[in-house]
Amino acid sequence: MPKALFALLWMVACAAFGQSFPSKPIRILVGAPPGGTTDTVARAVAAEMSKSLGLPVVVENRAGAGGNMAADLVAKSAPDGHTLLVSFTSHTINATLYPKLPFDPVADFTPITMLTTSPSLLIGHPSLPANDLRELIALLKKNPGKYNFGIGALGSSLHLAGEKFKIATGTYVVNIPYRGSAPALQDLLAGQVELMFVSPAVGGAQLKAGKVRAFGVTSPKRLAQFPDVPAIGEVVKGFESNAWFGLFGPANLPADVTRKLYESARAALASPEVRKRFETESLEPVGNPPEEFARFVRDDIQRWAKVVKYSGAKPE
Image (cartoon, rainbow, N blue to C red; front, side, top):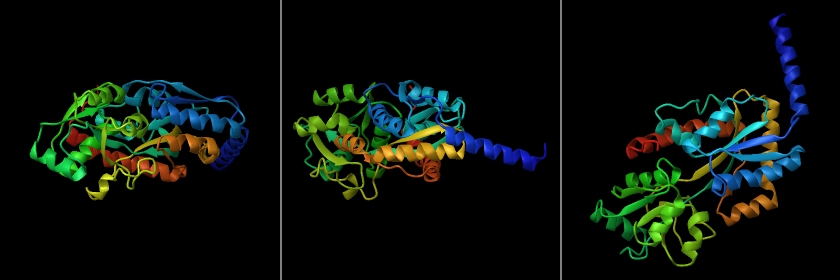
């Protein structure tokens, strides 16, 4: 068969497939357990996408290996748009954190859109002798190694927010790793650790109850939910460290299918239900085009590489 004819037939087949997509329920794999932010984002978006696509969009939790288990399953799935991944910042962190991955975080995926970003709060035990961020930095510089960071998971975006903070401020704070933010927060409340970075969804209630002190937020601007908490960048110029959550398919997803999924996800992010849910958890909807998201993923690997190497973190 002549190459030109083959190419024409292939384009026609792809176009026909895109028009008939989806032909069965769509699975979204999540590399995190139920109840966390990644799971919350995936379920909120999936519920709305099922309305626009006309078939069920179901979320399956495949936690393990820092999100790599779910990512590997999607990377090895058929590129027909019926198996997707909602991943998070660890997708780009793991490219440096793990000496060897069973997939390529760039080449083996089709980025569809970034769904949302989430800042974190730098909180501390009320007994800390510092009233604001400037006083905290001065305290840490004066006492290197005396105070501790509770780390929800080694290699997580919250862990590396702490490493970026130490790099930017020239301070040394000892990391105490935990299996999740919840137990780390409990130890902070008990005074076993003095500091931690935590998502507003996890630590916001304790802050509002006055059980912890907030020194800053990692977003470029203050959060409407906590207007009295300064952005760390107000004191540490240029500091920013947001987690992100994005929708991916396997590599070689047809362009028409990618576009249809992108438009469905973008419509989901614009829905009042999703916006209300995200607002309560200080999540910022994004919905950028696939090409822009693809560039972001490539660049984000390089952004985190320096911080991962500085931290010396190893996979658990």
